[in-house]
Image 1 (cartoon, each protein chain N blue to C red):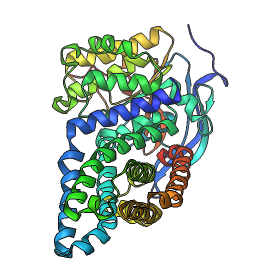
Image 2 (tube, rainbow over the protein chains, first blue to last red; image 1 turned 30 degrees about the vertical axis):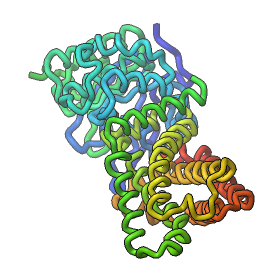
Image 3 (cartoon, rainbow over the protein chains, first blue to last red; image 1 turned 180 degrees about the vertical axis):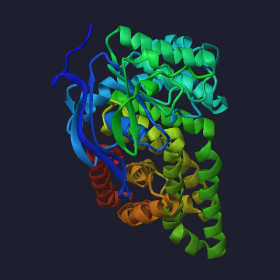
Length: 228
Length: 230
């Protein structure tokens, strides 16, 4: 079932810009994502995709512009957005000296989720056998899986995936696909950011970002092949 | 989850990481002990001078050890964007602050047990005024606890502020050391009075420590969330 948000869209950005030390990373971006949509944002490295995603996740504030995410104002209702959103990126936000299970239980505690769901989430991402091992000994791929387990645990209304396939083996890439497909079937909204090689068929729409600006994707850009 | 449960979750996480990393036991405690021994050696064998300066040296050792402990408390948050995880969580940010400060308090109090005993042995503090009674012991515990809570509140607040700074190792002590002056002065005076056998006169200094705690715990609870933001 698709959720109807205040303002109509799951994400509604108007003229959003962000600069770092006066260097613009995102330039006057307008973006509408309907509830239940899976949107793919493609673009080369340095195009501003991750910055845009982090603005939507409220990890960064825009230097100009306004917007609503899940019906809440991007600037004044950040806590409401955070309660309903999960950002998965190459920064896994894990504690090296905690075990996989402890990391998930802590994530559950600070997100107000039942910690009892943590073992199931680990099982789902194929890390049940290392649940009691410290993250310090994990490979990058295992860390990425554990970050995905956090999204499984939380089942957020809005799932933001920043280069989710990077560093993952084929089995783990299928986990990402399952996560996206599952979210879509439940009417949740997903935004996937990638510089290439993502399954376009999972997305309902693709846009391209270059030089900090969003453009509609050409058919050639949409017709992507699955990564090797 | 209630505020208290959230704070406990953060404190438990920090203490678990500390127990496994052994930063306080492996780095902070040896540092504090080395300082005390160096202070003792530099002052020479004169017993009167050692006893007179013991309260100040004890608190200086605690203060410098605390600065190291604060850095340790934020070390894990800097790994792989964990601090951003706290920012994006729906947890009450004041609970994060209280939890982090509580974990530092536990670590520092454990460290202070060793430091106080070492000071007593090296400088003959216990025998100085014969102040070994229950009232004196309680006053000393109160002074150490109140001082530690204040230091932990200050360190947890400024730790997050300097986390993003490029030269944070240098910026952090520069920011917090001047602000710890009230704790240092009140702690030294209260300890000196206990040592001299007049614990009943230390009440006003304990009051100052309490005011410092209230001010920085309140400031931390109010400001921590804002400091975490981009």
